[in-house]
Image 1 (tube, rainbow, N blue to C red):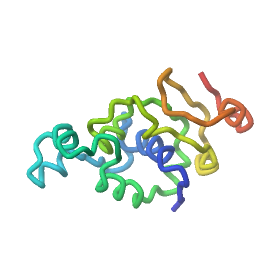
Image 2: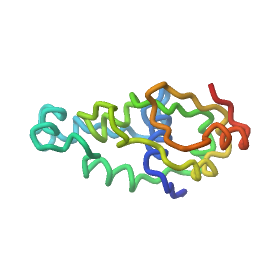
Image 3: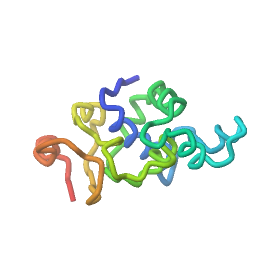
Image 4: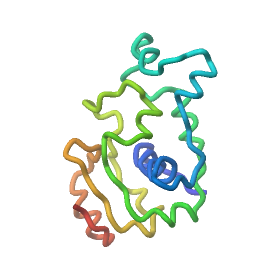
Length: 144
């Protein structure tokens, strides 16, 4: 099992493996988990408890502890640095994308993704690494 140093990059990998068109990891469903605790609306719960600017502790614990087998990491060929990723909604249901909560600050973990060939960016995305294009180019990763 591989260890990620940048939690937010790990979340983008999880987005691809868990919430992509063909999920390869069991889906983490925050609304269902909160419903088990009697919480019907995750967004209202977060706003009423001033938790809107952070990753919910139960989500952070789940995703930090999640072990991603090397064979799944080997299969990741593309990533999208998009603030609208589904995984973010399962971490911070009231996050509005206007701050740096999910910004990727390091690309050191790219070594865990030996077959990554393409990354895409969204204008208001979550990549906050200076000279990221150079890092991707040096690894032979296409960018849009």
